Length: 187
Image (cartoon, rainbow, N blue to C red; front, side, top):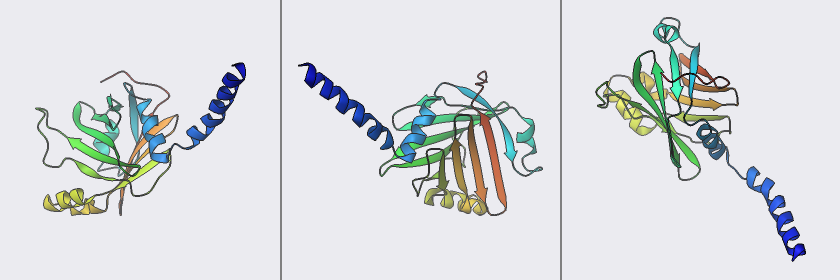
């Protein structure tokens, strides 16, 4: 009896590192975000246009990993008192992730320019996932006179110390970094 228990324990311990190594980059990234659930962090603009991004540079920036489910994480991003933005990260079949931007008016109604974003097209890394603009976003940007955004690629970065949100396209780079070492008071 003891021999069976010992063999079972050895087999379980031997399988543990294999299971940890089997986690894909997108699954590891999603799990890392999930570990932050319920916490708020302060951020700063670390890359951007000095004029176009001046208001964001001067405002208090916070993100709250507010709602974590098995398939979706919702992260409200506040710029001062403006609580109109929420990043929505969803798990997709084929081990991919989706990033959408949910923009709302103060009364809760959806903004005309909302639900844009994209899906990962490559495995990425546990620390970095990129989302090129999807067909819905390109159609939305074109319809609303923002076709310059059709080339958008959003990236989310996650280390033990920093979460980054980045928007890149030709002629435009915007990045906000959030300090994960010091959770902030909720806005």
